[in-house]
Amino acid sequence: MVKLVSIMEDGLGTIAKAIVCETAEEYKQFQTLIQRGANLWPDAPPAMKRLADLVTNGKVMQDYDAQSNVVFTPTAISKTSIMES
Image 1 (cartoon, rainbow, N blue to C red):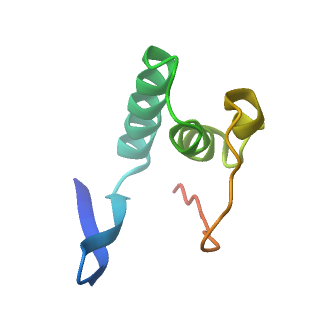
Image 2: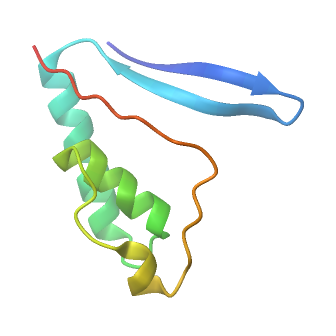
């Protein structure tokens, strides 16, 4: 089962969510979904391209901000951990 879990909420609504894949097979399917979606969206925002890299490779592979002439200013430190059984 794949679940979408709200992590925190404030006056603006939910600001963070987590995807929970309960099996390695579901996680591989999720990786495929994200990678295919990113490939079909050639002008995707840098944040979406970074997400696709994190999900499929575990790290950001390119400087997408420089490619799009957008300056990236992180407002919070994010941590991604990938666990497969």
